[in-house]
Image (cartoon, rainbow, N blue to C red; front, side, top):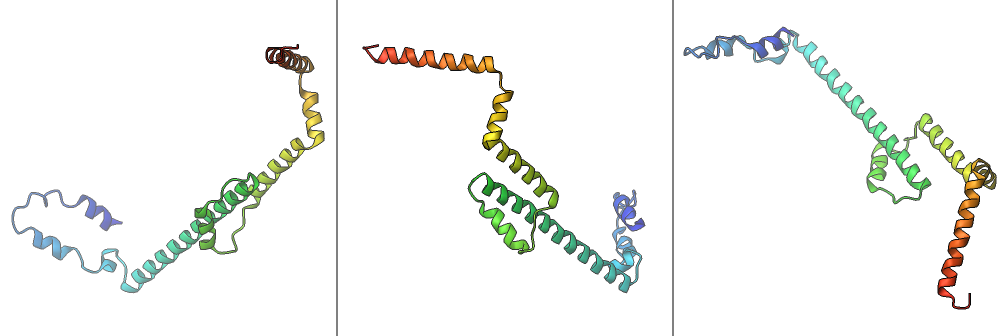
Length: 159
């Protein structure tokens, strides 16, 4: 940590360049990164190995999350009969076959599906009729009938 701060701030007088000052700097900074970090060579190698493993694990988790999202998008595209996306299918293939949509998202999609099924059924339509204003419905029906009559009179000479 001290090395990072020192390298960022540096010596304020080093930028003046009074000639020959660069040799001292080269000798002061060690060529071995392990010594620069204040660790032994073995500790530094172990630390680097641990960093690489953590990065690989994060990347794998990120890829898995992206594949889960792609799976959900595919499910939604199937449900609403939208065109398929090649990018989503490629993402699922890259992650492997063990990709599942998270349970919370599946519950949300299932709830939406049951609500839509309820609205599409006859009972759902009857409930919608009960919620409608009957006076407004009558006005719309009578307006439609009068409009049809007037159009028919315009087109038909017998009426």
